[in-house]
Length: 140
Length: 140
Image 1 (cartoon, rainbow over the protein chains, first blue to last red):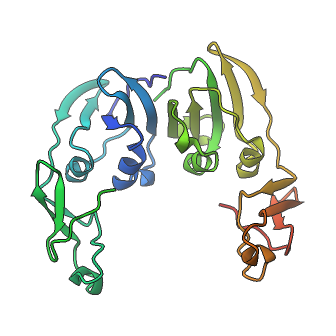
Image 2 (cartoon, rainbow over the protein chains, first blue to last red):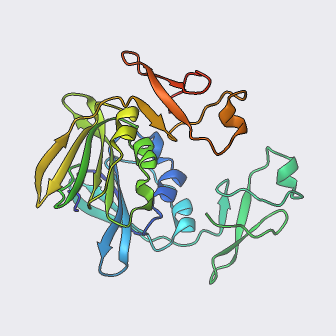
């Protein structure tokens, strides 16, 4: 199954198979009025299987959220049917209001207005910890 | 955005825009290993906007569930790249374990092993009622 190239928009390729929905939700794509395609379990020579997301419109993607979810995702910006930019993702140093701290004793459990901030504690192992209580995040 | 025709599989077309995810979940498509495409907010001359689902494999679709969700969905069975069958949907007389009765006094709230059965009480207005307590279902 192939999807025609889009004219103006964004393609997220090489998403780990089965993870497209998590990315879709984390980026808030459900709220978009434009055409969005989610293609799951596409055959890939590199990955065996992968997911792809295509967004048929200009859309400011949160690259920090995306890099946190999976730094191996390929982001291509399409203009007039051509790829004009490929964005490289990396693990963000900090994520704000992406994950919630699960520690019931963390101050964020009491002070509900506080931002949920996690910092990259170990880049090699992709470990993030709560800025307030050091609890390790359990990744989606 | 267009999606190439699939070779063997099923196409669900004319899904009300924004409802593809509900259909996707109700049919359990997340559990499939085959390639599945969900295309949201596609331009449609008939409907303005619509959603489409493509399943790149043989898959026994529960037509009762689908008819209950939206009897206007078009179901096409594809073999060797050609549509070999179009299935007509209708509101099923009964739905079993698709919805849960929300009435806390209903026997299904106490007897957790009972099937959740709703019957079509008013075809014109698409109203379903619980077989046990007559509570009206609140459609997803």
